[in-house]
Length: 235
Image (cartoon, rainbow, N blue to C red; front, side, top):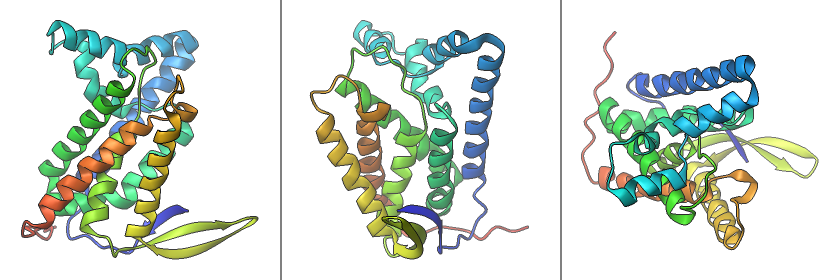
């Protein structure tokens, strides 16, 4: 199933979600520019500097140097992507589900939640394979946290999705709890299957997805017990 949009209106304009989308496209545009002017080697150097490299982060933590560049990449890696399909898929999910979570958490709360979800997701992936020198990039861990929060806060929301049936497809409205629950189950299956393999399946940071989603679920459970304080946007 591929989600297209949800039938879950918001009371406020999702300015933070829009800003994150723009930031990701800016980051990706910088990558394309570097590759166009300096080639693949220049791009690789850029990603090693601003992507999350587990072995470098582990070394920084081991030496107690927590304010060095490798630690700061826990933020910067979230705004870099590995290709059009990577950024397109990530931002599609963020665009569909992020606005409602932002509406519920508030703008500052959502920004902090998004970044924290990405940090925890990155740390989880590093914990699984701390010695790798391959840079981790992408907002998928942070977006997984958004999905986890949506799963708890809006389980009954209807999501228009493309459902593939062998050689055919159909547009169907699916409950959010089903489409996001299935997404998480597939991540867990892939994660279990990847144990004992030297690299993540297909280069995907599965454990970052799992950790991000669980963070979102926990935050969603807390927020669900808190009265909503959403205020309608005044133009």
